[in-house]
Length: 195
Image 1 (cartoon, rainbow, N blue to C red):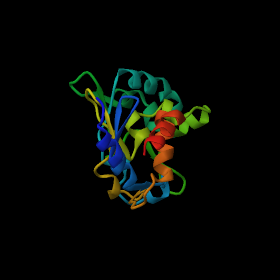
Image 2 (image 1 turned 135 degrees about the horizontal axis):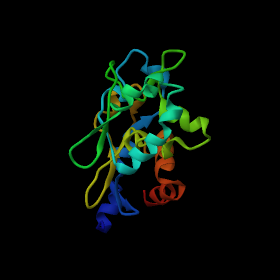
Image 3 (image 1 turned 30 degrees about the horizontal axis):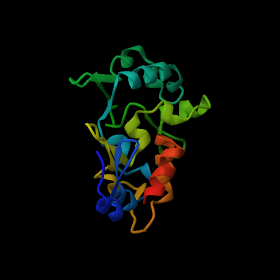
Image 4 (image 1 turned 90 degrees about the vertical axis):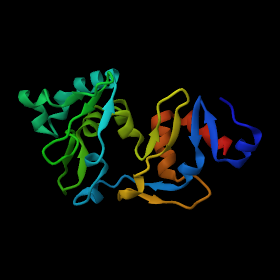
């Protein structure tokens, strides 16, 4: 798929590494991960069903022993069977706990919502993006599946305290960092060169 010169000049959508990037959407949001803002409000760990593929499942299962330091219920044998559900399309869904939060979410010392997969990865001196579900690492962005994947913003992103509408001409630094972590520095540099 290629874009016409007019479409490229408009700066609304560009293609980077075969991914159609909705630049207008990326410029419309500001992101700062604020776990302390998730104490008493609905947050991304309690609102979405997380779909993962076979490779993500294998990675996460390998981290379950490390995760129980943060979420002891994961370590109980009877609960391990309920961490994932088959989704009927050959993938899996991460289950929710009794509070309707992702089973990997836990409350920190100050009541903030944290991710046990993220915390375990940091303990192992690994980038959390190598362990967490892809959609969680990409938050508040969304990458559609299909013949031409599209990178955009999750439609509900501004409903959460970590995201705000942004009217700037440039992509917010928090969004740039999310792209860099998920896709790499060279992807981000190519994207910025096109806009």
